[in-house]
Length: 315
Image (tube, rainbow, N blue to C red):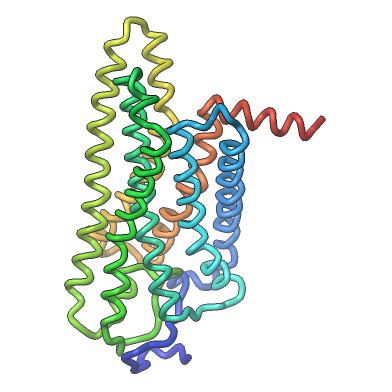
């Protein structure tokens, strides 16, 4: 397909992913940190899954939710980063129209799923701290499985209309997407039709899901902090709050970049396009890289099992 900006078509077979507009000459160098972070994310999340699977003492609700988070992170970064690297290294810019819509679905679905898993983890911490006697009965394995299924279905239901709407639009402006992946707004802007429904749906649902999850997480932690401050000793308060430390760090690593990205989209009209694209990739890659590091370093059971694993290999 031609790279022309004036290609006329209504039923595209392929799109052209431009990469990072304005930074084409530096893309090979930019790929180095992105590739490094991707490798760390893949290795770290697989290690988390292996440790939880092989350590019977970790077969509990908190660690099952952690496994869900690791699987979500693996899918979220793998559906975008390999294609981005192929653009940077091999100039492989073409992406099939159906593959583009599939990638869009996976990005939005698993982003919503990750937010939902953080909410489920906050609920787990709430029950464990505020009602510890009921924790083992309230969050049995079948309940955890139902929560995981609900999170997956919610993400799928909210994400599915986006590619379905995109499939209906005629595309006659250009075949070039100024991005490294098939991000929703970047694809919507190529349509030569009234795209307000699709645009408003994508933005409204994304913001609604994230804001509702953040609200309920805040409510959970308000109750958790009230329970912690009622503990009789400082050591007990610190020890109990320490069980939430890794979860809080992971929440901050996920929501702060996401909120900043939304704010720059709404209010950063004078921000360079390459910054928007770079930061969108950071939002998709940094949390999957940091989550296994955060939980591995701050969770004693995982840290001890990891040390035993490497110690045994070294002997």
